[in-house]
Length: 263
Figure 1 (cartoon, helix red, strand yellow):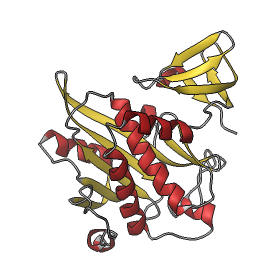
Figure 2: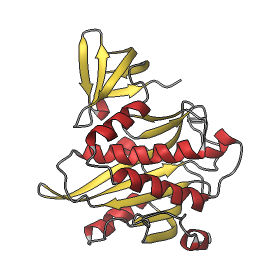
Figure 3: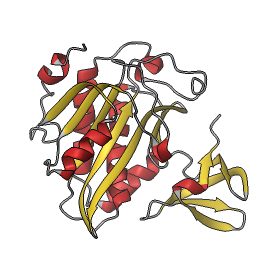
């Protein structure tokens, strides 16, 4: 059985004020999905800031029902529970601050690397995917009960399946050295908490997000139902739709309507 003590006993770094995200940390050596586990707890009233962590997911999920590939005890597979006091902003605003928190963490751990956010919720390092985020929410009618953010961050895994080996990477692969996963976890929580506190600072969040966005004002390879080609991204609207400059004008795409053709 995997030893939970490194996770449960690892002290967070000095941080003023003390972190509230991760103050309550729940660990299981193996679980089907940390998001499913966190969503169960959300439904029965779990408080904001709780963290659900495992060393191995048997059915980890990505965007649009895809599977998240992760070797046991090599990476971070974690879900965070949020209950925003007000949702006067869109849910995509929450997605942006979480992505920026992950972006900040990776940038700090890999100084000099090119770290980008690939819409809607992937993190690229030097053009390869290192992390993914999956947000799921619960509602009571039109009232948001809360949102769970599942994060998979490749830390020490250096071998990937043939299907993704040319498109996936990790902190260890990019730096040439192994990382202490508990330290990476606490850095991640601190980064996300700092950006979450800025959730209502719309202009600052938007500027930071666009500056990190893959393809922003730069032609990138895209494919959609009617065609494909290299076109610049102009931003993301409040509904989370991607704005692309096509020859006929600006067009907004939902998640299932367009895909990136990465090298």
